[in-house]
Image (cartoon, rainbow, N blue to C red; front, side, top):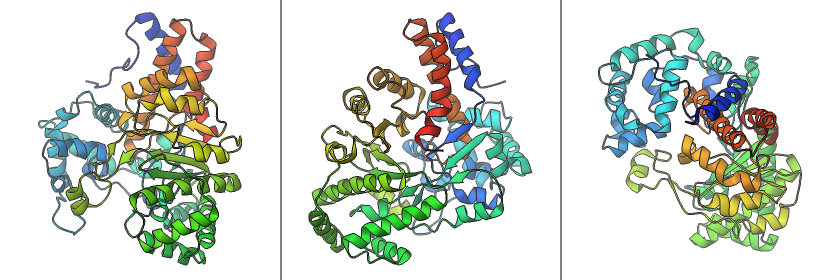
Length: 468
């Protein structure tokens, strides 16, 4: 029996639901533009079979293992590798059984919807996952993964992905992207420039990272001028592998526009490791403005993902390293924080700065008014903890009246979980169609305009904003 209700996420009132159904039919099969995410380019370069269901669905997906961790399950038991190389479970079937026995924990979460969609639409598994069905589901999915049509490139094409962007650090050699390009495969897998490790003085090994940046570029990165030029060189290198954007994950949205002398002095302190937390934040903020100026030169879209307290659990960080599900949203201020950047470049119509937030309270009060007037600003979709049906609906409700649809950038999935990509886009398309149907039913949008907006939100806006 299917676990997917065909009318999921549509309005309850029948006439409005019918409008949502009709809108959805026009967008459900559109190609996927995935302009920002964290899938592994190695998958597409080597095109080898995914090892087993656990390594496909559990160990790479912090949405999944953080929920299991919250119920006291050890990350080692889920196959999460330890930084010290200590024991962690490697038997995929054992990991899968733990997952299946605890699948009820995901009831009513977006993860449950994504997983059920992937099991059914990608692998043809329609039974509910639980302790009793665990082994049968594992065997069924494992059998599928052994077939050529479930290799990464085949799934890429089956998912109708027109373009997908991975995200690599500034020091990455992009060898997997080179291998993809040299293979002759026509799937569009591009990179994005993520320089956090060489712009954040509080990042582990910052000074060494900056030195490595100099070695890669042939620039003297002990000087402010050489450091900026090294960024320009690396951005050009990333552009050669298809990059159309840079991405910046800062704890706050602070920006600065310092004089060259003040910026150089702050940079010197950062290299010595003597920055105070306030000075480190100021340096990060100034580098956002520098990156925006570079974007005016080279055309890269500037993405700002701010407001996450990353790696909140010090013990987990010590044992497992970064990005293990302990990133927590924080209150984030934008109006004052972005003013230096906006004073410098906010009126530039050829610049695109995409803002993401983990503080929903700012959407109507700060972000929509900002994006609703500054030519350079666009709003990214509901992100991370809010890329959920209710989060997406709230995003539309709180931003559309002030910023409209066309100061937003459609949807991006921002995921490491490859098989969830079509599910995530399907959820976004359903939510948007439900919202548009409500506007039509309440006389706020003409039906013919709703069909056009549905196409824009599902496909055209992302393609246009990210210059794909």
